[in-house]
Length: 353
Ligand SMILES: C[S@@+](CC[C@H](N)C(=O)[O-])C[C@H]1O[C@@H](n2cnc3c(N)ncnc32)[C@H](O)[C@@H]1O
Image (cartoon, rainbow, N blue to C red):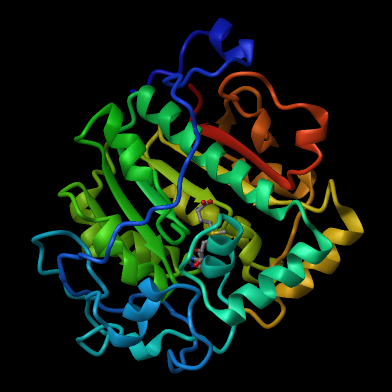
């Protein structure tokens, strides 16, 4: 059973994490995947040719040449998914005609793995919400602090859905700092994330990547690789960090969370963050338009909309808060810093602590 600390610690609002800084830097490693192939598992995205407007950096040439050996799942494991046409994604399938949320987020974080179409859409968002960059950074730092916290509590298995393009440190790196035996399964529906997974996410024995869509929770849960990696008799940390705002109401995000949560044993936890209109209101709504032509649109939600995603979980202190307020490393954020962040986040424990 995971240990969530004393009530005194819980109520103190101080960081129960390792005390390490959450500062992160962009990963600049080269492409060196293990080349194990797996196919598309989820509904996937419409695809087009990876030509035209090029990426911002020559490293990205590998997306066009296919030099990276995409679809790596787990080093040394010949995992190939069924029903995928056998070979999984070709590099040509990466769609550069429309902005991708993962590549826009990469741009906000200062990364290089984005194309002109992503940068143009991201710049439109930045025009309306100039604070998206510090907001994205704050969201990423929340993810890292939350991962430290759940691993320190004793959880040894993580499913990270909506992985994003690798950004150092990644979930498994932070988790495995505490215990190299922590197992992490990454899930994302963006083939460009898959292209990077082999080099930067699954380059150790305890991490896997599935190209799958959160809108198909049953399919994710039934996936043989997930079943091989995750023991559903032991607590699991489910990460849904900055992904649910890509799921519109009509696709039932609460139902998706509930379906995933149902598979988890008691003592498991949900780490969730979500973009909100609560702080930038009209501007945030206007900015969401920048995602209109993207492969996934954005539905920003209010505090009252977001808290129910934790149904069935007991929220750890301090509850659902603006992400910099969740167990900050060091000094708490100033009001001016907080005003720049349009993300709520929280961590809940299934069945209580
Ligand atoms: C904003 S990034 C968040 C990355 C990381 N979780 C973080 O917070 O730093 C959102 C990620 O969710 C992925 N995503 C969006 N819709 C998805 C879906 N329906 N299924 C799986 N992944 C999805 C995107 O491809 C992208 O990589």
